[in-house]
Figure 1 (spheres, one colour):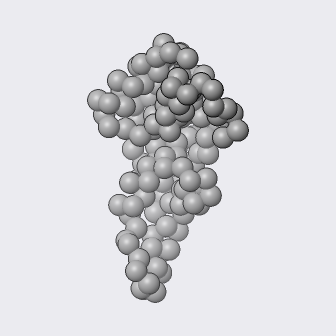
Figure 2 (cartoon, one colour):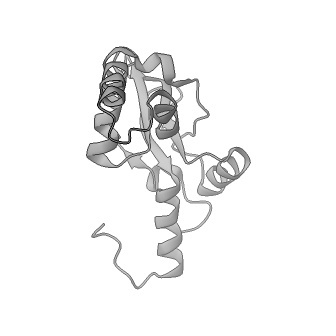
Figure 3 (cartoon, rainbow, N blue to C red):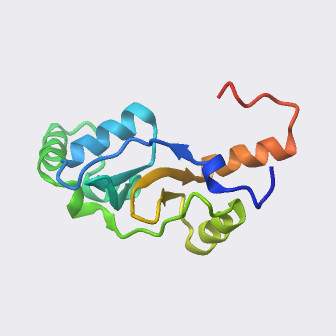
Length: 149
């Protein structure tokens, strides 16, 4: 595998998504259930934004056992809509873009995940720094079986 490998070979396909009209609580559930740090926002099968774990943390307060803060956070998560916190029109990749293209974008913008879309805006997947680390592992340690991950 080389830096000219297409993104479609290394991206995460069919990532969990949310609608702009979902509440932030849905995003929290995805973060907790799957351990993701980025959730694409899709409307009518088209990518309209992305919510990062950092976006989520900007809304909730750190809770240190305070019942009042826990209740406040729960209220926020049940009332704030995804469209209020998402990054609209995020930088995207095409399935035919290369790993080299992705590396340049990650490095220049300090991103940790980039949605992958078709020309018509349909979400095809998401490429994360974790996906790129797996590519690097395959290059540096080809004798290890990473398929079991």
